[in-house]
Image (cartoon, rainbow, N blue to C red; front, side):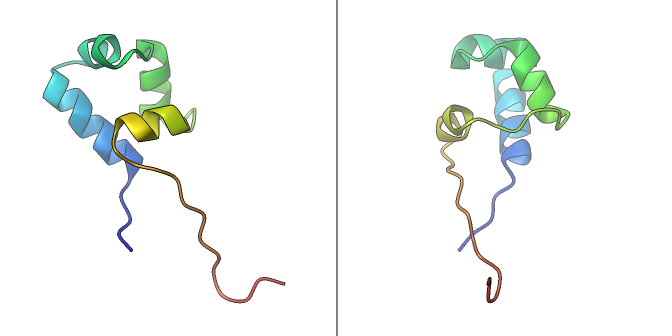
Amino acid sequence: MTHTDPIIELEQAIKDAGTQTRFADKSGFSQAYISAVIRKERPPSERLLSYLGLKAVIVRNGDAK
């Protein structure tokens, strides 16, 4: 299994777009939401993860009782 940090992926997508505003316009997310995700004030939504080509997976560590 590969672990990918969605914030790193988002930062790269923003860099590729040129600015947060351009990324927001292109992706359909608000710039305020994108900024909040980057600052870790809001978690990335499943829709944003999907847009970045990612999906959330929950993994159990050890024996959970």
